[in-house]
Image (tube, rainbow, N blue to C red):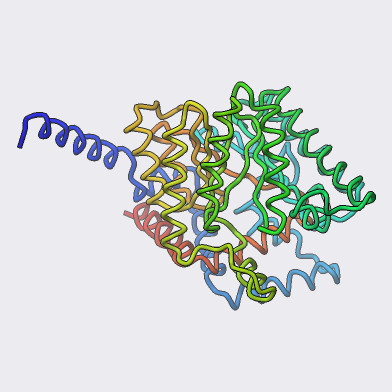
Amino acid sequence: MSKLFLARLIDYLRKELILSIMVSFENTEVAFRGKSNRELKKAYWLFKLVANPGMVKFGKGFTNFSLKTKLPVKGIIKRTIFQQFCGGETINESIETAKKLAERNVKTILDYSIEGKTEEKDFDRTVEEILSTIKAGKDNPNIPFAVFKVTGISTFDILEKANGGIDQLNADELAKYERIVERIETICKNGFENDQPVFIDAEESWIQDTIDRIVVDLSKKYNKEKAIVFNTLQMYRHDRLAYLKEVVAQAEQENWHPGFKIVRGAYMEKERERAQKMGYPSPIQPTKADTDSDYDASVAFCLDHIDRVAICAGTHNELSSEKLAKLIEEKGLTHDDRRVYFAQLLGMSDHISFNLADNGFMVAKYVPYGPVKEVLPYLIRRAEENTSVAGQTSRELTLIKKEIARRKI
């Protein structure tokens, strides 16, 4: 065994040991330092409820019935599930949440989580709200990104019909499509002018091609110097790693800087059902392991091209977070390199967020906000997703119990 090989092996093992000592996702003292005993116990019982599919189903039906019949349940919702997963009803309330996160070196992504609107006036009002989040970010260094869903500012049917190309649209539909593009560009241009990067969320595959085309066009325009417009890639799709590489190659050729938020994804069951019903090949990975593999490969690819690419790794997966932290070390990047962010949802995976932040990595929490009644669809979806994700809720419960026991000792 050569001395050079031995030296390299020792250096590699030293780096592995240092990182494992630095970042431990088992450190519940760091993870829950910002929660009182009362808040910790409340979170425990919320996750216990979310872990029960029957209770989630009952809660969804009861909540919808209560709101329709105007039963006084808003206060209960606000003090429980809303308080756990949302920053507030307004930007100002959410900025207070952002201040608390900033005390722990965690940034905030304000997410106006209103869904299901269909009127043009509502779309325009949502655009104005998103512009307000950009302004809030300009005035507050602890709010480094803005975010929005295209379906929050447009009708679904136009996006779906345009998925095969805008030549599929008639004159009236084309006018509506152009209005959608105008809204999206208004947001991205405002982000560019205020030096505030903007995440555009991923959606169902049968409208995603439309979104991808718009994002690439706007990236060419506003990402000349650095990534301002970010696309979101859902790695449960088997074609997204190839698409990522294709976009980076295009950006290198045309000299612009792509930004990507990399996630595993949120529409898998819906995607499979639609593909089966309509008789086309499913866009979904064959196995969870394939999704995990493509997720990690996409993050590694972005780090290999970090001189051109900016990335936000949106994940609640400990292993993927650990791998990215190690890659940052191996590439010789500083922990606070603003081209590489980790992100988790408010109220979840605090053991990942705060332990990474405690070691100087760039971390942001998605902080949904909006009027309680308007945010309910988001909250119900979040509860359903937590119930269906194997191991997620049980992991949260285990860590909370561990911290409660530690505090007693």
